[in-house]
Length: 188
Image (tube, rainbow, N blue to C red; front, side):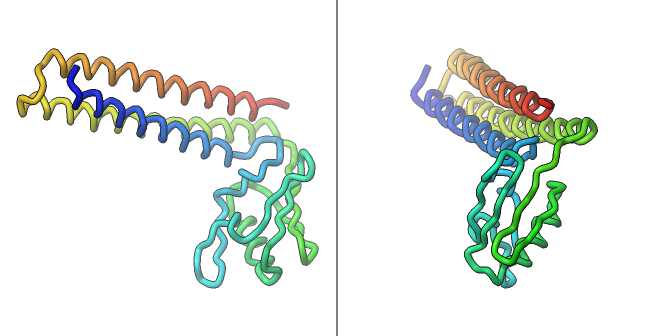
C-alpha cells in the first residue's frame, strides 16, 4: 500500500481511539451506586455570569462509598454551586453546612437502573456514530485519491479493508466498555 493510504489509516486510528476515549469519559459521568468525583464532571455553575465547570470552583472528594463532598474555593459561591447541582439530572440532593456541600448517593432502584442503562447505551451509540463518521471521511479520501490517479484501485480496496478492520476493532472496544458499565449499573 502507498504511504498516503498508511497516513490516512493512522489518522483514522487516532481519531477513532479519541472517540472511544471520549465516550469512556462520558460513561464515568453516569451515576452508579458508588460515589465518584467524576459524577459531577458535567455540572456547570453560573459563577459571576460565566458558565464555569464545578471542578474549577471546588475540591470534590469521595470520603465514603456513598458520599461526595464538595468544598468550594470561594465560600460565597456555595449557594450557586448547590443550585447548579440540584438542576442537573443526577437526582442528588445537596446538604450544605456553610463550608462544605455533602451529596449522599442513594441506592438505585430497578427502574432507575434501567433508565441509566438506556442512557449509557445512548452514549455508546453516539460513540459508534463518531467512529463511523471517521470511517466515512477516510473512505471519501481514499476514493478521491483513486479518482485523482494517486493510487490504484487495488490499493484503494486494501485501504478500505484495513479501515473496516480498524473500525470494527474500535467499535468492539466501545462495546466492551459498555458491557462493563452496564454490569456496574445493574450490580446490586
